[in-house]
Length: 205
Ligand SMILES: C[S@@+](CC[C@H](N)C(=O)[O-])C[C@H]1O[C@@H](n2cnc3c(N)ncnc32)[C@H](O)[C@@H]1O
Image (cartoon, rainbow, N blue to C red; front, side):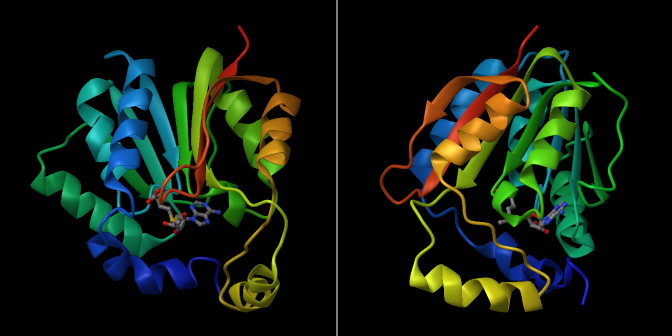
């Protein structure tokens, strides 16, 4: 069963779901925008149905957005067409398959994705290579204290669906970022309904 099976199946429903915590989502968009400049080349992986890339498109030069699920990408392309957004390129690819030359991007986004990867360290190192010096990696990640009983039950079911679930703490995520050569420039702890750690990690110049 392919990795994208689960996401392909839920893509339509996912696109219709309202954002869980609108105020937090808007705050994350606002903070992200403070890092953007009109001449920037941006990459997003695990872009889902493209809402975040489309929201940021007017503030940068170009966004290359990928997702492993072709159904997610199809919906994202439709949204871009409807919104007359021409500077986002959506394509189907897993982050492991995606290749970019070193120091290509000014900013990379990965939201609600790192905990789904086999090897987050490998992905973070890859992002670090593709960023220009001084570039930023902007992430939002569900982190946990320690694996609870629910996680232990759900994890094997998730694996069967081609959905890897990794449990790590905020500290482990931060260590993975600094270990790859990033410095943490901004951090917003989970608050209210949002259970995600939002972080901006900067590649040292
Ligand atoms: C929880 S959704 C998050 C979507 C979007 N970033 C958001 O914040 O709403 C995770 C997305 O990651 C995609 N995905 C999962 N594994 C992936 C991989 N290895 N490479 C690229 N995309 C992946 C899924 O297809 C799905 O669209």
